Amino acid sequence: MTIWMPSIEHRDGPRYAAIADAIGEAIASEEIEDGFKLPPQRDLAWKLGVTVGTISRAYRLAFDRGLVTGEVGRGTYVSANRAASDEVVPRTDDGMINLSRNYHPASKAQTDILDNALKSIMARPGRERMLNYMPSGGHLDHRAAGARWMSRVGLEVEPDNVILMCGVQQALASVFASLVGAGGHALCESMTFMGVGHAASLFNVGLTGVEMDNDGLIPDALDRACRDTGAKVLITVPTLQNPTAVIMSEERRLAIVEVARRHDLIIVEDDVYGYVVDNRPPPIAALAPERTVYLTGASKCIAPGLRVGWAAAPAHLAERIRQSMFGLAVAQPALTAEIAKTWIDDGTADTMRRWHQAGAKARYEIATEIFEDLEYAGHPACFHLFLNLPTPWRAQDFAAAAHTRGYMILPADDFVVGRTAAPHAVRISLCGPETQADLRSALIGIRELALTTPTPRSSMI
Image: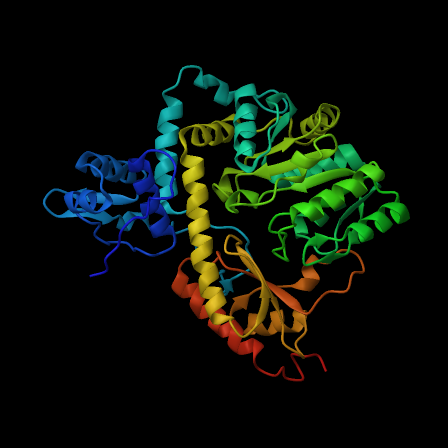
C-alpha cells in the first residue's frame, strides 16, 4: 500500500488547516486518488508531532471540503464523490482530446465547497441585496475583498479604486471603450491571447504588436511603437504571458515603466495568472500606480465559472472605466461577488489557488518528462506550454495533423497580432484533459507526431 504523509513544515497558519490543505493538494496532483485510505489519526499525530485533536480537526475540515469520507472502524478515505463533474470532459463532442482550453476545470470537491458557501450566504441577514442591482462597480465590501485579494501579490489599493467586473474579458472591453475609444489604437505583445483581439474588435480598435524576447516586451521596441503609432494604451500580460509563458523580470518591468512615463502611456496589466506563481516579481501596478490599470479575476486561480474579476486604477481612470462598465452591463451579479468575498475572507480562495498550483505542477512535470528532447517554454505554475516545432514542421500544418490524430491544440498563428510573423510553435494546454493519464497519452501522441517527417500533404508542399 502507498505510504503518504502530508508535508506541513513550510506552511503558514494553523497546523490542522495546513494538513487539510496538504490533503487537497495531494488529490489535485493525483498523488493520492479516490478511495485512498489516509493514515490513522493517532499514527499521523505521532509522525507529525501534533495532537490527535489536531488531526481530527484536520480530517473534519477535509470532510467539510468534500475531500474525504469517514467510516467508524474503517478509517478515512479520499472521497470517490470528489471526482470531476460529468460536465468536465477531456474530449469534445467528436471525440477529440481538448488541449486548447487554458484553464483548470473545477472538481466535485469545489462544488461541495460551493454548497457550503451558498448555505452560509443564504443564512445571512440582508441577503435580499443578492436580488437587487448592485451599485455600478460593485458594493464596497465586494470591492474591498478584491483589494484584499490583490494584496496577495504585493499590490495595495484602496477599495474606492476597485471596480467589480464579470471577469477580465469584460474588463478588457471596458478598457477599450473608455480609454481607447471607437476607432482608436492600442499596443500589445506581438503574440497575445485571443480575448484581446475579440475585445478590440467590438470597438473597431486597431492593435499593433510590440516585439518580445525571452523576458517579455522589449523596451526599445515599445519606444518605437509609441512614436510610430501615437497609441496611449498598452495591454500586457507580464506574468505567465499567454502563449509564451514568459514571466517578465522586475528589471524589465521597470524599463517598460520608464518608456511608458516618457510617452504618457497607460499600462493595462492583465494579471489573471499571477496568483499561482510563488516568489514572482511585483505587479507593474505596484511600480507605476499612477498610470496602470490592473486587471485580475477568479477564473484561473479560484474557479473558472465564477466569472468575477476586478479592475484597479488611479481615481481619474477608475471613474471612466466604471462608466463604460455601466454601459456594457449596468452591474454585476451580487451573488457571485458574494461567493468570491466569502472565499477570500475564510481562506477558501487561497486553498483553491494552491490546488491549482499543485495540479499545474504535476501536469507540467509530466510534460517535461515526455518532451525532454524537444524545445519548449513553460513554467511549473503555468496551465500551458509553448512547444517549438522541429524542422520542417509549420505551426498550422502541425495543428492540423494533430487534429487528425484526435488532439486539439492551437498554432502560434492564432496568437499573432497584425502582420507579425508567426513562429513555428503551438500552444498545448495541460489542464484540459480530465486525468493525468489522459494528458500523458495525448502528450506522447503529440511528441511522436513532432518527431515524424511531415508528409507532402500535411506540410502543404
